[in-house]
Image 1 (cartoon, rainbow, N blue to C red):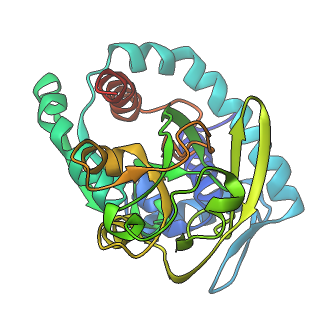
Image 2 (cartoon, rainbow, N blue to C red; image 1 turned 180 degrees about the horizontal axis):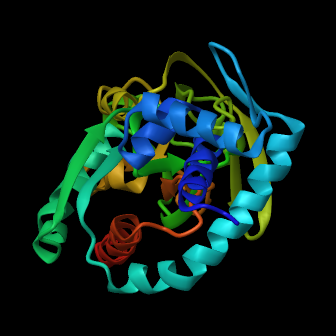
Length: 299
């Protein structure tokens, strides 16, 4: 017979495996790291086998631990299936929702929506972290990360919120004494501002009438920050391709000029990224649904 204590410890053990560490599981569950370690040790004593290989830097499952983990998952899914889906529909989102976002997008597009979001959910708090680096969601306890561009392979899950077209442009000052390009090959001859966060920063693929042309680009300035690229464009430092939300106002006001408007380049999609969970917490599900609706309303 499975004792209630063992069932509780099986749940904790599964969180340790999912998070990859005792500290990650502690943050997820809101209990002390020492308590997590004690519960796993007691579970191992109860069933009489070692489930985890431990060292100072990492954890790994033993062969028996791998099989036991799969059994834990099946058991937990049965319990969650019985009550979890009902609770996610009925339960009011509560607690603190921790959201990370690139700085410029978070300031201009996420922060303005938070007041309206919280008006709908009086039991929620939001912590918004603005950072242009890719944050470790487990280590930082992030519930939802807004990411823009192309997602690498990951154990995380992601929902596309919207597409953000990229536009090739330059300033009138840069173009003043130069020939405005009329073809991809002419565009390749210009001085580019290299944005190193792109999957292929030294290439640009342009498509027109279902025919594609890849050009190789060069430039004396490169940066990993999109706002820095925008500032350099405005200063007349060269040509670049940026997401429309960054430069729409500059284009409307004539501070930047779109180049080769008949050609299309790949979009930089906007994603809500979250940790892999068997049942999504109401606060996470609700926030992602809210963002999807509001950000597409304003597009």
